[in-house]
Length: 280
Length: 121
Image (tube, rainbow over all chains, first blue to last red; front, side, top):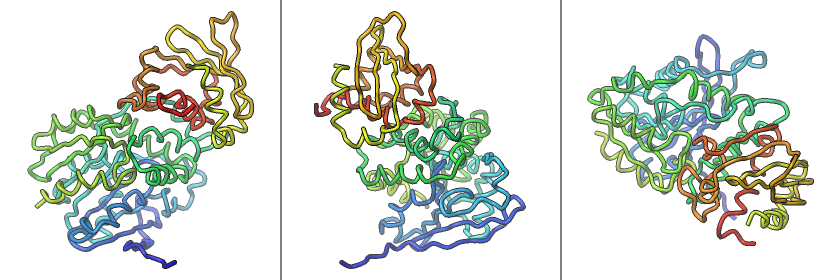
């Protein structure tokens, strides 16, 4: 039996964010124009393993994913044990821009999913000149809470079990079993209260409905891709954003759910590769 | 059809194992028809059809019959493929002590999906 290494390398970056020292895990693969990837709430950068292992992407792109603080192999900042983690739109946009600056990424293509798709809309609106193009996956302008978020973080409900179970139905029906359960495993590994803290941005703080129409796609092209089976950010919600932003390109991905790049990378690449080709 | 739940769940050793700390009764309402389902350590011990005079249960799941039919179809359409998809559309009402439901969410999702068309008896 021979070992085979994937072409992904990971490093830990020491960086001050929001005035506090952070230890951030960053991984990347490929060479070419930078493609910065943002993971979903309660998960981590492993969601982009499919892109980083596909030469159709890595031959011409430097694919970079970082784990947000509190997620994956990134640590929460010192003092976390006495705090409640709550992600806000201001923190999230600052984090992405500061990490881009630290990595010296000049006008990357940004791809973000779910909360990453929402912050992609914020960045398209507020910082279009920092990006070559923005791709929002499962991006909607707002989502009302539809279950009691407190169940995600209380001692009589196992956090890993409930986070995995909450999102299990968001995976599309045709996802390969291995990728489906890999995707859910990431959720089961999240730290206590982290998924809930991310959803503060997704469902409470990060309502951008009143502003998306101001996105200027002449300054930064905007592409939206949403899975047909997503009932968190539904196709209708993505189409509502697309219809209010002139020049925005949109596709609904058949059979896919809320985690397209992770639940079924091969099916997702059929939609992503043509988008990457269109980006000048 | 709902009665098939007992054998289909109990025949799935992995599902029963995951439910080994679950002992409860819950109400499943399919339109106007009620079912009282009792679970002991992950095994379903009874599925009883109503109407009931004073059913005791920890929680209830209530949805119109046509919504359950879509959920139990072989390939449910988007919006009907998961209990939380029904909750999201506000067609599945969850009431009672939902700590038991949420602490065992994977169990309840997988158990109720056993009634899907095409699932081996």
